[in-house]
Length: 431
Image 1: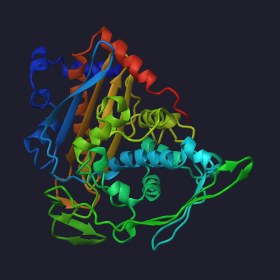
Image 2 (image 1 turned 60 degrees about the vertical axis):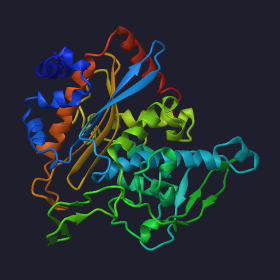
Image 3 (image 1 turned 120 degrees about the vertical axis):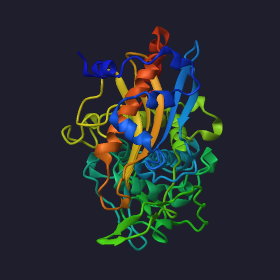
Image 4 (image 1 turned 90 degrees about the vertical axis):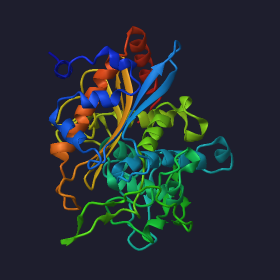
């Protein structure tokens, strides 16, 4: 028996009455017997758990609409977003490329066409900045915006995000009100101790497009964001009872007031805008072309082993790598027919997954976003978190429960519509 169906049998069938309830999440969670679910629900505030489940409903023509249900969704309760901020950064990098270089008007001005696969060089212009001239994972070993985006989406590479941050600049990332994301702010690089004033300074870029056999240079000067940073639109941003500063223990909560913030509902909004751009309000859309969307969808769901550039070893990066909801756990292939479009985060005891889970064989499709805090000793930055005991099992079980519930909503029409939509969504995706 397929292991996927085996776990469905263990879960049992969701009662049909639940389908009529206003919010199925409390029922799914409270009726589950899994020890890890009971542990988290015994003190959801301590685990800072938040869940947002969105059903995707389709009309006779297959056009989607969305109905969301939440469990303990608190837009102003702080959690560190970690790598989830990489998704809007990737979208804004593609949008900037298209706005600056991708139009016919640009070509008419005599400026060479630049796209996501144009080789580039990154220079340095401020203390702490580093340059890049070679990328051994890219074609011809030259860095490109496209290859940085692939790294970000395939394996959540931190350096690749930092290079996208440097290309986009801090100011467009710091305030995303224009996209209907009033609380989101992305104001620093990751894993390099980035803080003011260095976080305000971004590197100069040099694009190296080919023009009739010769290579020219198109420069983007170093930038400085002089605007006041948006306030942190969150409460409870002092977390834990102690934290490690190097080898020294500081016996007070860790202050996240100068960190990034990306609330769970706004995370799912970004993912929905990238997967269903024609079916979200205009102010939530990014300025991308069809091929940009197809490119993002491809690498949001592609198993790393299937990537040519960059190339990843299947043993180190199994198909369920960075797929916490539904499929997380020991290395394993995804269940047959299942594709997961997602972006995860993992840092300071927080585990986050922002996903759209699609089963084209059985007509299942839904969005599910969740965060859980896994740090029983309340000491941060000590690398002693409860990811394996609490976080990963909880998110995996949550995905299984919601999948099983959503399976009760399918029929033959829906199966046909799901297969058609998600096959078409990858059309024209170039490497």
